[in-house]
Length: 105
Image (cartoon, rainbow, N blue to C red):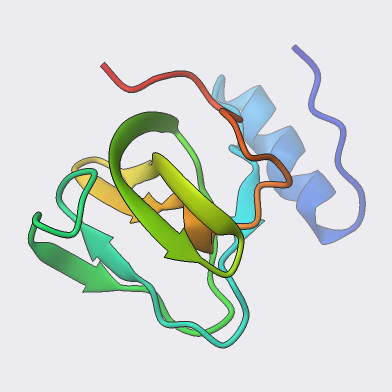
């Protein structure tokens, strides 16, 4: 599997490929928002972190959960950005209203 990157990311991508790991695409969080990171796919889950303005996040997998309205529409998809960390897809500019990653198990 080849990784095609340009600029500053190219060196990091080549290093990751050489190490046997692959860089995950990072998506921008809505400009002007500090987004809550939750322990599960809904606002009833605890806040485990808050993303800073201008954050970019990986989408490791996605899971349906509570419906949320944000700057990118209304969605019940929640993006897993790290182990036990989810953000509403309504706040992440993935360029899609559907899945951009596999479903979380």
